[in-house]
Image (tube, rainbow, N blue to C red):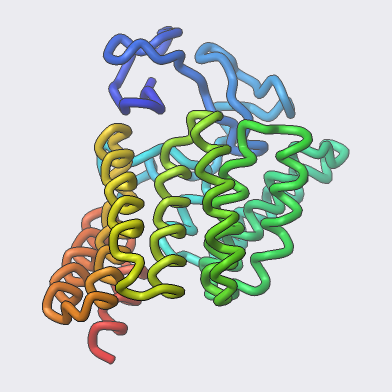
Length: 276
């Protein structure tokens, strides 16, 4: 049983982490809710927690120390649009079969937002991300930060920088309250890029502070899956400062990092960008 806070391995019947003392909970792949470590079925939606869990970044190809995530996030981070869409449709089917409770509808909308972003359709991701944030805000506040971070990324990619900044700040606050450190790190990444794209080199200090927060959260949680993305975000800072060689070096590190965590589509995307 892996601790979500420090990533230490614990015995299957553990209730608290023997490394950091955090309460051990099991995430549900269907609705995103958390459950006691010994639970076999989700207390929110009734889905089985073992037999029907969706693929995660703990599946073959996941590097030790990266954060556990439902299939929607795993495929989103891997830039695998086809599997992300299949995961979203599966979440939608589960929701419908169980009478579309708000918590499951929110999870399905979040999954569709991830799928659109993975496919490069940021504008299409905004509506499901907003719907997910609204539903999670009312029915599953622990996941509201995830939805806000996704919405912030979609807004950033469509060029709505002010909205991306404010939504990223909202996501950071929500994630901090619900102890969603991985998504807090992602929201800091959006914040840094929104500031850089709006203010350029003048945003250096605030962007560096945001990226330092990302690095600290990755180090604290062991969320190595975000390490290549952090290199990309630092490359954007280097570009804003006119550091061409630094940007190239950081993009190379990011590409190598994606290869190490078995995200070949992300690596291929960066290789194409570097050769353009």
